[in-house]
Length: 307
Image (cartoon, rainbow, N blue to C red; front, top):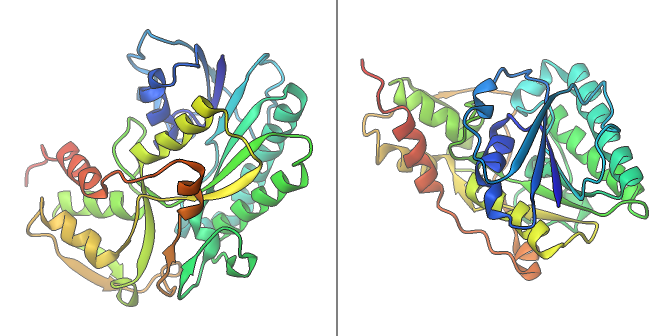
């Protein structure tokens, strides 16, 4: 069977490439990326156990119609960074919505089954446990989160024409060839490795947020394809809920001199909330990879830095 991965050179996409050999049903993998983030190294030394092909395509401007007989599509191509989305709101809307339209149209025409990545940031400001089926909890506080919610609505609108799974991922942590350092844990690890102060919004220090290990993200993709589970529904996906204080404590285990500076920032002025993933567990997939180990691996990645 054939798998197409958009945004293949990104943080998540590159991890899929590394681990795709574990999905036995997949024999051929088509990789799509526009190199906007210049992660060419993602394509170095690809394993020979699958047939890989790569195409330099801007999915917001070019359709996927040239690709035939694709059974599964994992859509990772989008501009990300919730906090940074305020300054590029117009471009993020244009790019991400155009990409989503192209993906949906392709899947409808080719009967390809779609795995869509949404975000737990669609919940926004909360004070309790949040789950997928209570729409009153949907209060996105960034353009990025608003767009993810709009993408979900696009899928629902076409639910009679397409087979899909949509996953609201917690903030990603872990090492891949396409690793980025703009999300919370990775950014904190990078700051600590440079002996820089970790910048934290004061009231956010004891607030809970959902985090997802890259290892668990891959489990999600593998589960859907191995079991051929595409029931046109939305699921939270996270490895655990943690406070910033707990995350920094984990970092200090490997960088003991890590220090914090409290600041004001637009996106982190939210109330504490836990995200529930029981719905995904009920489907038969339990996520429990260690965020602590992801932090350890990320710190180790930067351990050669000297001061």
